[in-house]
Image (cartoon, rainbow, N blue to C red; front, side):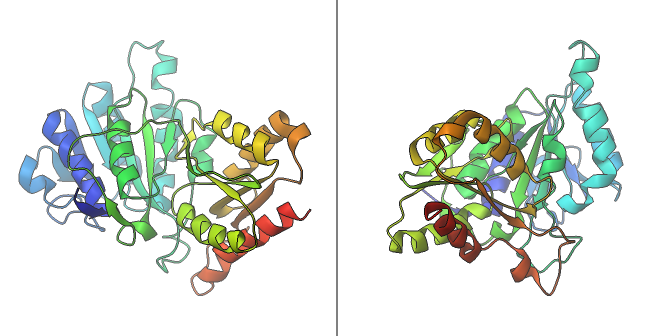
Length: 325
């Protein structure tokens, strides 16, 4: 089995999808001969031509509006927003058009073939305009699916599933793992289920939930916690919309404790939704308050990035407080 980093796995998934179906189109800022700012679309224009992999103007609202039109007419567009921080000019198109096409027409037409790729999160010293995690803004929107992979194997399988899914999918890629995450990835076509969390490690004392780049941070925190004799169960949510409430609840029924972590600011972050839902279902089983380890309620800083990010030390502290409550 070949070894790939996350960028190579994403490129491989796009290659497979475009090779299988002529209706799959790939476009965005600099995605053509340049291969995108991170090179995720390298050689796709060379292989499939300018009609199927091409550059767009630097107008995010136009990129998604164009993608909506293509999808409504039967194409399978994969639109790239160069950084997730710049998805907000397209917010109206995504929330008011992409998410509602099927509903407002009574399923006479839809844009279910649309996938929107966007690198998100910190860890590259990108400052406030290249480091944000905007997933919670979109998780409030019925009609969308939101997927976040944690490693190359997940990235390929989930991206292929997203492209073929009957609903529009926002696919957020943790950019700090693009080249840092390396693993075995099958060359052949495969899909991973959207909407199903994965228990990556079983344990009995506390449940940890995260997604994307935070999964690697959780792993380091668990190593420290286990030196204290704390048994941790780890869940990669993988999909935020829909999110796998059953898997998380079943884990909390067993452990009685829950720690949730994400890079986005605490207030209004998706951890709050998870905490509320699990409290409703598991209240009588909880041995301690549900803990959130998140980014801060400030703009994402440049020089203080390490202080801002919810690292393994902050997570292990929350684990210890939860177990010793």
